[in-house]
Length: 100
Image (cartoon, rainbow, N blue to C red):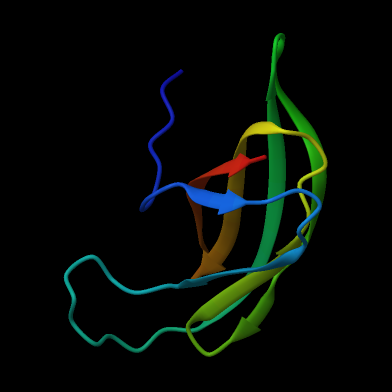
């Protein structure tokens, strides 16, 4: 399975813990009215046997911004997932994180 990532990789210096924020907007760059009904996150460590879920939780939602307070535990590459619902549809955005 191929994973497509949103934006550039994010760097965390261990044992850094901070908010990861994203603005949700339509791909057409047109101002459309919408409400983010719910949002959660998952943090996966890329291990030898595939992705391993390290942490998860609920996102903070403020207008069209979602954020999660995360702290990668190991040095290496992570896949962070925003999972959010808008108008009954579920969307997933993947972000690559490099921790070291």
